[in-house]
Image (tube, rainbow, N blue to C red; front, side, top):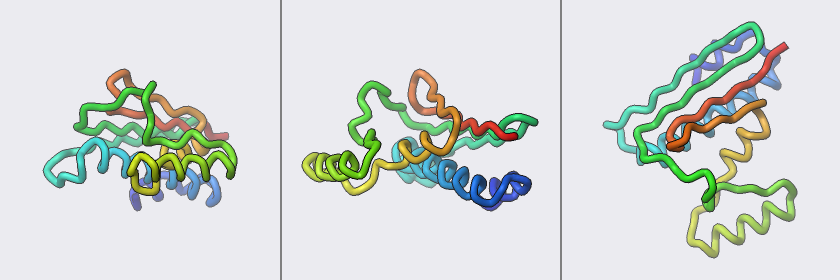
Length: 127
């Protein structure tokens, strides 16, 4: 996380902090869902900076997921919908959470998964 923070030194603090939230959420998703918090499994993270974008690429060793069935991820867009999502997760026996993909999607300009669902690109356009 410190490396990525330093990688974006010229990005305004507010934008950098938001981008760090998206980065952290995708990293934690890869650690939890892709690697099962197994210290022996490797998660590859690549950062690239161009004149027009900051790009992060995550690849985890997991089997991926079906993007059509994201029952663990929140899709809420309002406080009322978020409360309904929390109730739905509780009914399914899921722990609180599931906001990571929603947060990242709102912060970056593009969030692109590979077909298998074990790789993701976060793309933030810069001025």
